[in-house]
Length: 119
Image (cartoon, rainbow, N blue to C red; front, side, top):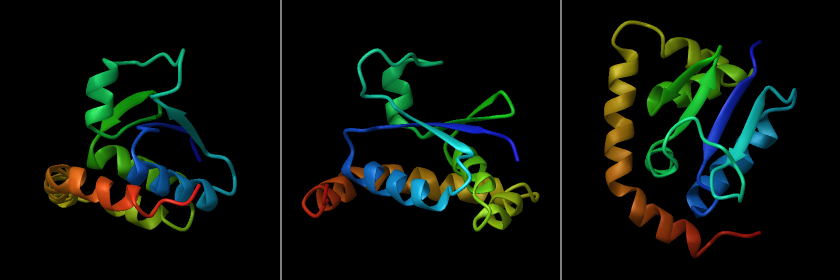
């Protein structure tokens, strides 16, 4: 299995919950998590752009949105079938549409998650 790098928004309570879940699922350490809000972190793209959309690198290919999630899923054995299914014709465009919808409601979800985040 290839190493995947994931960039995430460490200032987003919703993102922190999701990354915590994936860290628990990633028992083999196949994912390198990079907090874009940490000082001194270099970004392969503009930091604000990367904060606006989810990004991952798989096999030296930079991915964003649903494709980045699918790469992360493929790195975790229990979710690997979902990541592989995303490669079937027509599946990734549907996932990307759902991701774009999610981005529209993300600010409300962040406020909700922020009020209930336990650190």
